[in-house]
Image (cartoon, rainbow, N blue to C red; front, side, top):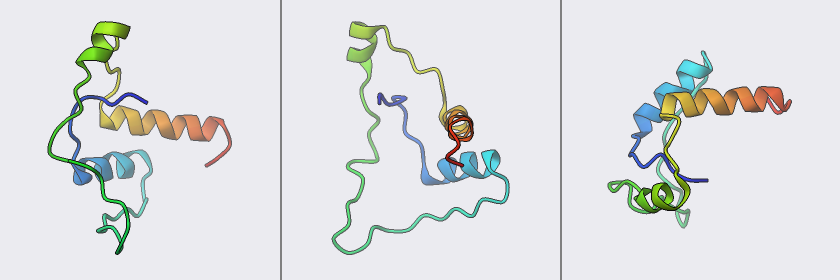
Length: 79
């Protein structure tokens, strides 16, 4: 899994999910005591080496990525 190289807010992710799955109930909660938190959510991943070495360029933004994942899940019978 290689990142998109951009930051996505929780609100943007929630909007992409509810756009893809109308009626979905999505909420953001703080990690539970002792739970894992995301590392630094203020700095986007640097994908320059992936571009240089692999020619990688992200094909999707967050909305397209969520739609693609939902389509994959539907195709593979897990939704």
